[in-house]
Image 1 (cartoon, rainbow, N blue to C red):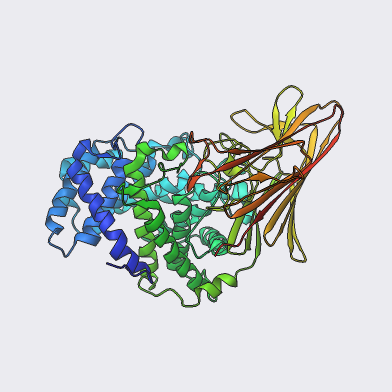
Image 2: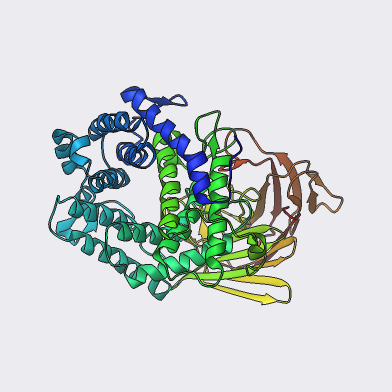
Length: 597
């Protein structure tokens, strides 16, 4: 059967629905010993799975099985699954998922009929936001990043709607979230996951849609601050729109979750209303259809009967390890159907993609620069569109644990062209200074000032750092005594980066080195010793100046070069010795690439 792909409803009914129904029955029939891809799904590293089982199961039975011959059997299976899940540990996202499912049942008038009294009493105790919020300490989060105020708000609000508590804790928790945004982002209204380090990643853009979705689902008035944040986030994803259905490209939990982030933000903005202008909603909807189609084609592996984020050359960060395979399938499925529900409630669920979608893509600005924060250090994102490419260059700080990892580097990143390796610290495309004492410093994390401007057909971004960042620690540490100026120049088919380092007297630098990692293959070093050309791949050439040696090596197959979308094929290694007492060092590199059809 050939599937139609002209609307969200076509994709959901014809392709997503059978996958979700199948997973529901497989989960029920597998019982407590259910195994997916060799993984026992109820393990101690799958801390959210119980609540996700409840939520997906409730949705499948109420939305996909109702009106079919399987409905009564589905309700009975749902009761058993809920009882099983109630015995599992419940944490944060698992709690929110579980209570969301129960509220679905209550609204359908089927809660008491489906879930026995003993199970409900158990869930009433375990599905509680106070497990990670200290009410007595001004509602302080217990060991969680600040985005969890959104999770706590949702749980508290659903408890109120279920009649489990009378006090309006939800409004206090929502206020705590907004207070954090005001403190660390001010009027720019982007969410820093940390207490001011500057981690503006996928989740910073996603969180307004998660919060506003909970607000709309539970009948709370939308705060103007959250609406403004959602508009900002939607504008970023409109700038990322493409014809291939690819989403967010940098930071942790990218890949499949980078794609569904775009789905969630654009759909929530549609239901919220008053956010899109002119033809923006046509663009957002067409992009959403592409994203959902790509989820079916690329991320779902029919052979595995599962979403694939872990095998066949793919890799995600440790947080979403394969021990969570059942929960990750359920999360992604629910993000897809929730996005469809947003579009459907906005009256667009069965709308055809605009016939001039390609022209809408061509009308998007070629250069886009958005500041995230402007305090002691500036944080920002640049998006550049060229020849079918959509490049993202993040100027942020990953903060504790992530600052040195490749997905947080201030370099051009693009899905399927320049993907980065989760949890690895190769330092792709960033010059590294090896100091006399052996420590390594990079121009990352402490960006003092960012200047972005257009000069003719070139887009130029200049970054200034008064201190570099030392590698090796758990969190960023300043390497004082070395300043840097980094200049990006982006023109059609070419990206150039120039670095100038100024060391104060007494600061010894022994060596400078550069690693370049790409999907392209068949690399050869040209006679100039500076240029590498490739026989295959979108990236056609890599050039670098200021280095003494150049080696082209195949990427190892030990998993360290695996990205969310596949294994990188080639690494180019360059080094240069630094003369003693040399106070100024200048290096540069260039990437050349071909058009994407």
